[in-house]
Image (cartoon, rainbow, N blue to C red; front, top):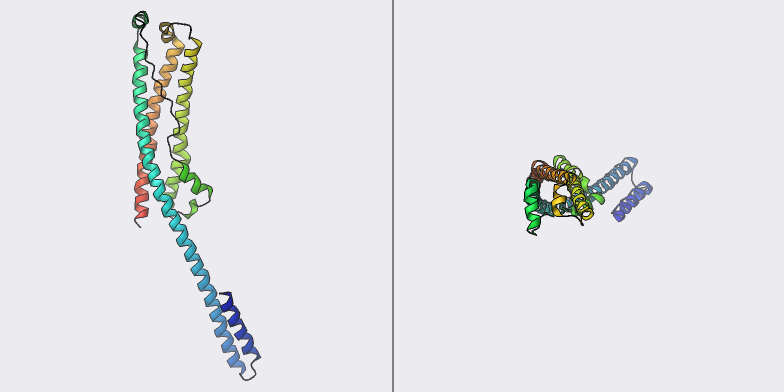
Length: 235
């Protein structure tokens, strides 16, 4: 392109210096050459922009395809976590329902009370999103509604899941601490302890709350996002 511009610039110079042409002819030649230069530069800029835009949208397509797979895995993980919360809650509620006589009977028969243990860790897939965002490419997504849904999911709902799971783990570890503190005492006394029972009650409430967060917020938005991505990829 630079060579073309240089060539036409030289033509303008020659036209100006050409003594055989009239002023009108020189002006006409100069206007034609200038038009050619402007057209060539404009076309070059347009082609560059088109190529860059095409490349950006190819990156968006790859990103959305990967994100769709992440969301599907998120939904699977959410269902697994919900089931774990549900099963743990059943176990804790059985413990809370044990009377002093029942605990005494268990202790005397040298049986153990089954205390469910399920520590909840990172379940959401954020690698693809974080990589695309940190590279400054989120703006490549032209569908504003889709972009906002993605941002809401990863900046509001995913952190919310991590927080409620973290809070649950905190109360679970408090139970462990209580067990360690009372290691030299009988299970009868431990499971009859009001503070220990209250901690388990809160654990059950948190478990139910987290199931609600999964059911009412995170999972529906993940499903909605997958549909929106499918619609975008079909274009």
